[in-house]
Length: 300
Image 1 (cartoon, rainbow, N blue to C red):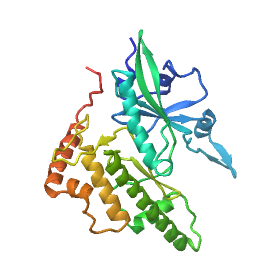
Image 2 (image 1 turned 180 degrees about the vertical axis):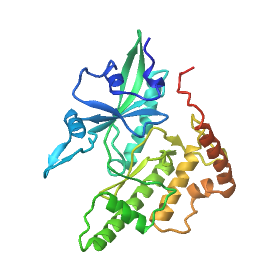
Image 3 (image 1 turned 90 degrees about the horizontal axis):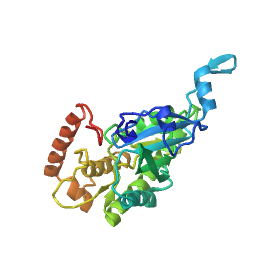
Image 4 (image 1 turned 30 degrees about the horizontal axis):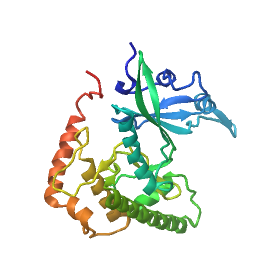
């Protein structure tokens, strides 16, 4: 009996080809992405010719180079099980909320779709996504985000070091901050108007692109925003709503150089010192639980 793909800790190329809704042998190579996580399998969709260049190398100016194959798309296979088609469609509605407010500039376009997943005589509804691949630098809300750090991001993205690079760097950093301001505005609008917030706190969920945009690349964990004293936890015991609001605050404080912005109903509620102490304790409990062996959904 084949193991349910949602229960596997990670997937290989052959696992993807074994799915009933994937053509075999197909024209793409599937490789595990470095960010595969708790709520979905994340696979790079690669061109076989690029893989061949990566493995065998190419000659450039008499030297052999081994260029890393860049994904054409990112395939997500959600681990979450749905009892009915309606339950899956409710999940898609939350994705649509994020798209409405953040797409296309501030979101890796997800392209979700539902399929019948067939295994040993039964069919389940499986949620997948064929997502835009976003290249850039991971933006950590808890890390250094001052001018020098942004300039190092720019250098790491391969901008040249021309004589006027300091001027160009200043212009790029100014553009980043302008776009961050719009990103924050849209997120606050989403929270106020829909009562939902995406996971902004997860490692690697936010990417700073070469064009200066922040793009959200993970929408697996959209949470409801409630302004009552109760601290909600996701299905893994993580206070994702509170930590996402904290992330939003840190981005606004650091990238927009706002030293005192703890006003308004969003920050007043979620950045209350006593509440933050409780959230910190819950976060620490979650981090400890992650050091234990992971029990995947549905596994015994």
